[in-house]
Length: 206
Length: 213
Image 1 (tube, each protein chain N blue to C red):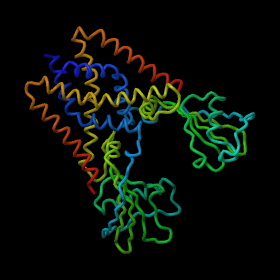
Image 2: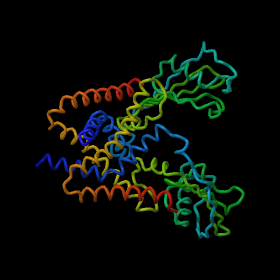
Image 3: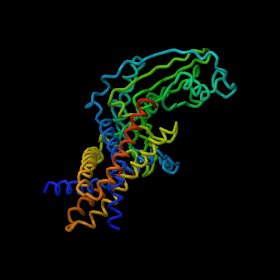
């Protein structure tokens, strides 16, 4: 049993090591962004205009101007080769006079706007500095987008589960190997009491 | 001797961060899997308290947007202090001065675990509070990466220090774990395959997502 648990602790660690390190490093950069340059070093946004000429929409989809936001977004992403995950607000949350959506990937946001009464597509590309790329890598969550996004989020889930696995298997390994357990009991006791106390305090304090 | 020191820091640092790792793992899973039951909220509870808030900051029509937000933030914190609460506030659309009643201000206060919508009536010196409790899931999610800024609560602010400690410990434990593992010859090859393969896959995923999307 000890050897099996030890192998779980070891091998799960080796598998997710790089991912977990990325999350802790990027999380630290997010929390202390000013220490890592803040918003400095970001290139200015790049704006380009294209034309929707030739696009025929499935009309009557509930979108403004007769264009369905999801359908337009899918067409624009493919036609103008926008790479990333599309965030398309539903018709009810679109602006009154245009269709607006973002195509995002860590470090790059492409904002697309198409007025209802026009075929002009305005694409504003904003790039991040290194700290911003790390912050946006950290924030990728939710299964959606292509297979590469799903794979990334799956690794994210693995890293999350590994935190719990490390903690539990680590306690078992310590318990089985430590000759004098008092210090371990103190460390574990303080950690559990503090964390549980914090959660309970936030749930019930006024 | 050196190896023993590394091992002890790995073990006891890990035990000290046990609670944080559980919170971190559960909250991260919740971000990817926001099931409805983790978003449950309690029934709102209403209560009143007498308050005396002289000179509650007001907004005027000649203020810029930033000035309005700053004034409402000051007003919200004044309300929070008068009620003996701790936490943050929402100075945007959620908080407002009543256009029809110059003595009525609505403050929106929030912190992990609870939201308060407060109607302050300055002429009656009373605050009517609608309090909505969230759930343990939401508290755990909000503790994820919480950096310690919690107006009105020194205890909650200590979580920021715990975050710093656990970040350092986890990074150390990752590196020290690899060091401790390499001492065992019979596990080196299989571990190297796993570390190399998974590490390369992780790096390729991150780079591909960032550069191509």
